[in-house]
Every structure is written in C-alpha cells, then in structure tokens.
Length: 236
Ligand code: ATP
Image 1 (cartoon, rainbow, N blue to C red):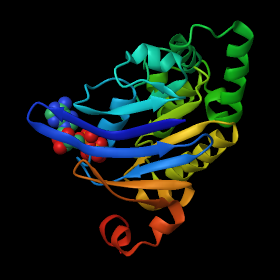
Image 2 (image 1 turned 45 degrees about the horizontal axis):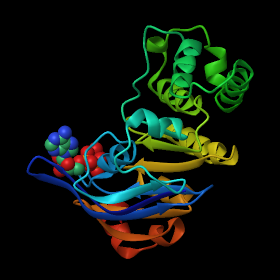
Image 3 (image 1 turned 45 degrees about the vertical axis):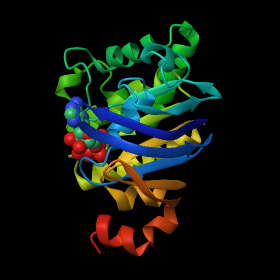
C-alpha cells in the first residue's frame, strides 16, 4: 500500500533522514520506534508531502507521490494525525469531527453520518461529550478526538504520531487497544511511538530508526525480544 525507497531529507545543513526504506502492506499495523531526533516525525511528514525530499521515492497505492501536494495525498486516502493533539478547542466535539471530512470532499451526507457513528462506537466518551467544547476535554479525550477526526476522511491508511505522549498509563492502554480496533475496521496503521514495548506488542512489524537510518526491522514480537532493542528502547 505504501512504500518508501531510499529516502533522504535535509533541513538546511541537518540531515534528518539518510536512506530510509520501508513498506506498509494493506491491513498491517506498522510501528516506527527510535529515540528523540531519530527521524520518525520527518518520515511521516515526508509521506504527507509536508517536507521536501533530497532523494528517494514514495509510492502510495501504486502511485508515485514523492512530489505530490499534501492535499492531493490526503484525497488519495492517507490521513496524518500529528503529534500534539491539534484539535480546535473552541469547536464542539461534533464540529471537530466534521472538520475531519474537509480533506475528502467526495464524502456524501450519509457516509459522513456513518463515519460519525463509527467514531462514536469506537470512542463512546466522545459520544457522551458531543456538544462539549474540544478545549474542555481531558488530554486523553483530546487525543481520541484527534484520532477520530483523522478517521472522518475515511482514509485507507492512518498515520499516528506519538498518540500516547503525555497520557496516564491507563489511557495509554486504551489508546493502544483503539489502534487494534481501528485496524479491525479495515484501516492500515502507521504508528510512531516512544512507548516501544506497547507499540511492538500490537504491531505486525516494526522499524527501528536511529539518526535518520533504519537500523533494524522485523516482526513486532521478534523486535520485542531482540537484545539490542531491549537494551536501547525497552529499558532492559
Ligand atoms: P522526536 O521523537 O523527538 O520528535 P523524531 O524521531 O520524530 O524525534 P524528527 O523530529 O523527525 O525526529 O527529527 C529528525 C532530525 O531532524 C532531528 O535531528 C531534528 O533536530 C531535526 N529537525 C526536525 N525538524 C527540523 C526543522 N524544522 N529544522 C531543522 N531541523 C529539524
């Protein structure tokens, strides 16, 4: 579904990605793990068309999107939920969800209602708070709203940048369970996480990034047991 080949990205003189290659197949949960500054966010921004690429190729659903504009990439069925829960605090939960449809103008009223219902089933807490202002939600609820909004454009793939960041452990567990449920709804998931052990335990496959390079890849469970991953990322 999504393929990155030999991708390099620079910010001025800083090399953020050196030669990254990875693949996400339909229906998979793929996680990218790695320390601060490893290049995880830059990888997602490259896919979404938000940063310039120095070298390499990105293919989505068989089409070369390396130099495609972000709005066109979104319309192809790729949703990006950035780090930091950028919801609209002055809009209600329902209105925030509706803003998520703007990326996909082909959605009809019936489909939008169906997507709202799907989200309210996935996130019952959002249903209870449908008329509440986004800014008055807890951190975990705002993160759920950000993910739900990302699903409102009915994407084939959803990319989540650090959804568990700064949340209480019990909410973190809820977020990871939700990722599994989102996949059960037929979505492909590309997940960036600092919480490597949780991410690898739900992922089909994972890639370990270090200073802009993929240094390891494999099945989630295998990476969980890899001595190098354990030492560097799982605090063993
Ligand atoms: P984190 O988990 O800390 O967000 P990350 O793995 O997502 O890290 P990136 O944010 O992709 O890493 O950053 C990769 C490298 O690029 C880092 O060295 C970072 O300092 C640098 N970088 C990121 N954004 C910019 C920018 N706008 N200008 C200059 N350098 C940047």
